[in-house]
Length: 311
Image (cartoon, rainbow, N blue to C red; front, side, top):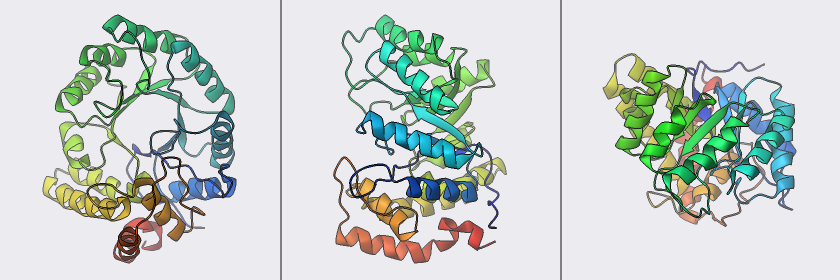
């Protein structure tokens, strides 16, 4: 039996979702992705996030994915599930659904459609749901990378809520980072996870607790090395590993324009024996240049993609 690698605590993966040819959730691929993450040594998975295509999937697909993940996980990894919606009433329903399926954490991101974007309305949207959540809550901060931007003052108040235990900060914004760090100063139990995988070294050096990455299924080992280097005070080593990881991600995602994104990611996972195909709702495709770059990366980065084989 292959043993997990010694990835430090608090490396999480915002895992992609595997589909079969009919666009149903592929349960066997889900089983393989669970086993891969366990061997990779990550602490938890975020299901149905941006990379997980949760916003596009049907209720049946979402249920199938969470059921399969819970079944094959057998309690080994923490499972966070996105419950974002356009009203607190719908979020509460989603929270109850996630809890009934066996999720550990309910994650709320900004809604995709929001009327009356006042501070009080934002607070009610989140707090009404958090007050009634049967699960601990994670807050997913997308910063300005979405149609609805939650104001800084609101984020600060959300982070103070007793039900919030985890923050996925994908804002890439120093002001938002400062808000999160200030909240953790008051609530040491609050887990701060950086979600911008191209600047992990910066966020770890700033004092974040860990990483929750869309590419965690393939870059989780490198991410752990960045964390270990920062914790040892070797920021130069962390920067070197970050540079190497960025090169790998650009190869997988289709260059700095991220032109292949989900298709490139899923193509890599097909080549790694985890997924069956590259089907994705946004319709990304694998270009010839992206496929060539991925083939080269598989050879060049084999020790990081399959670190347990190098032990």
